[in-house]
Image (cartoon, rainbow, N blue to C red; front, side, top):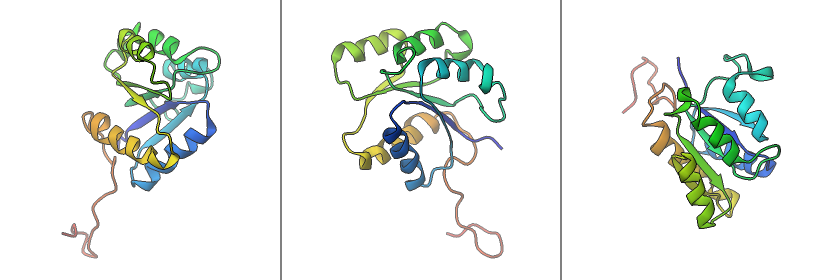
Length: 159
C-alpha cells in the first residue's frame, strides 16, 4: 500500500511542530519526513548516507522547501534538484516567511512549482496542510491520504 510522502525541509522546530500537528488535526494519513539543512535534503533526495534505506526514507510525493536553511539555501537545493531528470516532475513548493518579490521570482526561475508564504500563526498551518493535500497530493494519487470511511460492524461503509 502506497502513501503520500511529504519531505519538509525546515530548520525551525516550531514550524515542524505546527506542520506535524496540522496534518494530525485534519486527519491526513501521510508520511511526513523532515530534514533540517540543505545538505540533508540533498542526501535524502539522492538516497545517500543515512538516507540510503528507501523503506525508511521513501522518495517524496511533494517537497515543501524553506529558503533559509543551514548548509545551503532552499534555492541551492531547488537548483540541484531541477538539474536531475528523475526529479523533473516532483512538485516543489517553496515555503517561506519571505514575501519579497525577488524571492518569489527566483523560486519560479529555478523551477519551483509554487510559492507559499508561511502562516503568521501556528494555528493556520492546517490551511497549508489541507491545500497540500487538495492541490498537490490528490493530483498524484496514492492510497490512504485521508482517513478511511467509517465502516459498520458488517464491514460495509457507513453512509
